[in-house]
Length: 435
Image 1 (cartoon, rainbow, N blue to C red):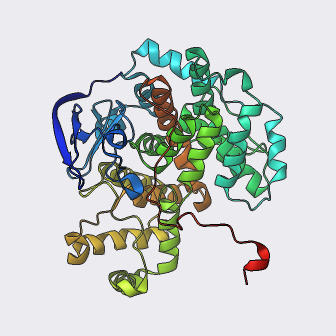
Image 2: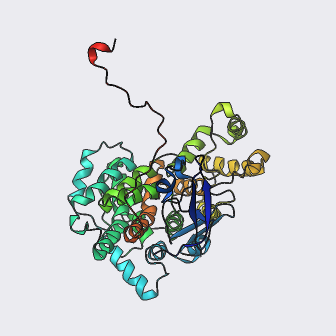
Image 3: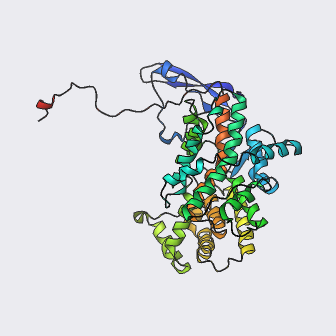
């Protein structure tokens, strides 16, 4: 798998006089990395990097991000081009196979995904064990983790055919499970998937159809949702993807690894950010309150955060946000939501923040979470479902990264080190002597 080259070495001089030479590896794009795998053997030290912000944990060919320039590439293709010219399942094929599909390849792939969308009927019984008001992400973690008990025949991670089947099953079934979580929460019957619908339309159908009347899918809404899926499909070695790789490195069930990824994504600093955006808009309450809210954001002592602006990686405009901004305008025009209070607050907040020197100087541009929340709100999708939809879209990225890791001969079970600052070894104190 490896294409990394090592044309140079870096020399590390230790306080005790020892020197260690570390290979400098270069990829096809991005900064070079120091290969520290033999650092402990050669120098008796570990590296210290909380959050792994300066550590490359793997070699990957799937996604590349240049945060300074605002570039996101999947297998070398710009995200803007993929969102404008591909369907979500085309992008799925690309992430999994490394190349865009031919028409015949795409037709076969769509067929294989479509005919795995139903779930085992007994899975519906699992939902009865959850409270109706459970968060959909909590339900998805439990139900997707339980898939290992229903589809145990494809758990041999060393078998390429088994990995292909589990890949198709996850991409196909996660939307069905997400829609079931929503239907359960509102007391409506589960809606079975329809094989005559495309991926996004099928999800909308399972979310909003009811048995007593036909549900008509708005093509503008379906395409907007498909773009949201594309823009969330993969994003390099983020917290949830790293979690999937870490769990997968143990040889665990791929369903367990994906359930762990969903658990990591649930955090408000990660996938929960678009849900936090809508909660923030509700907290602001009115367009007239925006300026006073932004003053609180600028006050460090207030601990008030501006959600949906800025990004851990992007120090320029998030390229996904630019795509969704145009999509948001299209959706709002289609639905005529000119008088939705939350959407009015969002648009005015964006306008004021982009003109405010405080935010411009800090490069706090709207990110993908800001616009995706606006679109999903306009489509009538409840806030609590936002992160579940993110998980649905990111499933293909997680499974592509998992597949890549399984096939990488350099990968080992994840085992980070630590800087220990606790007590040194000391004698045991009997109970009667502890005072």
